[in-house]
Image 1 (tube, rainbow, N blue to C red):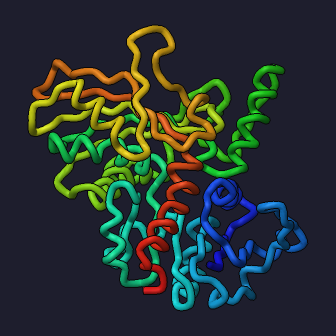
Image 2 (image 1 turned 135 degrees about the vertical axis):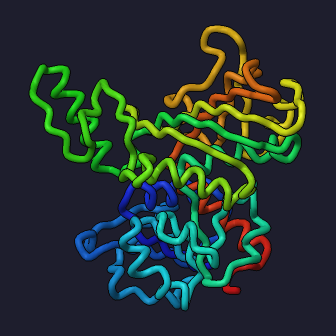
Image 3 (image 1 turned 45 degrees about the horizontal axis):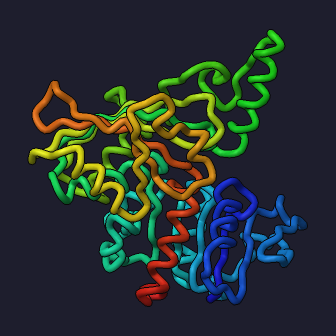
Length: 335
């Protein structure tokens, strides 16, 4: 099994390597691919040092599966070319709503891998990935009619530069110095910004529309979803306050049992001080955590949840590697 990672020197690329380190996936040859500015860099993987190779000159016929983790612009330019010679798992937003490209969270809709027509599989938006993995077992039991979600997203969702700027801004704020934001629309340190991605004509941001469109494509196009996405001064992990309305009656006992039994979910829900998960505790962990499970007494069949997950894992690297594992297990790659 030969693999390549495009964007191997970036946040998600390095996370993919971390996930592969922990997995038992047999890798015969690994190619770490990046732009020419990263040439000369070396990255260690499984006790061996690998040279970073140039994307412009890389021969994708050398590999069975290629992970793209370098952003929308690179995927737009290179992914379809690569897919002629290798199966592509793309972490960017470029192919997500393409009807010929399956949008996959393996625990939720791996059956859609059979619909692959371009030899490309898309990874969902990080906030969507953790949401649908919690919604799936509940939708199967009670049928979700409507979702209202407010996200509290870490700066790592924007990449390494926003992470570095959060640290820089925090130091400046504590020293009482002037802050000029580079990667944010306003100061992020000690603040909350209700704006992720660009605005559409109806006032929603692209991040909010992604959550609605991607949830429909992955889970069920009959689900109505409205979102408000907020950036917080947190390094890693996204949190979501979620309000659901089901078609069928439910019990909290069955909700908790369904979530705990579903692969990738873990319920931490004690009604006491600290009996819930925060972004800091989710960092570096594979699970999607669900807390604050309670009935919404203002609507029929209403439920409230608090969902937290490491966005670089569930929303990107881990999800991508699990797609690869599913493909290999079922001999889908190369078809």
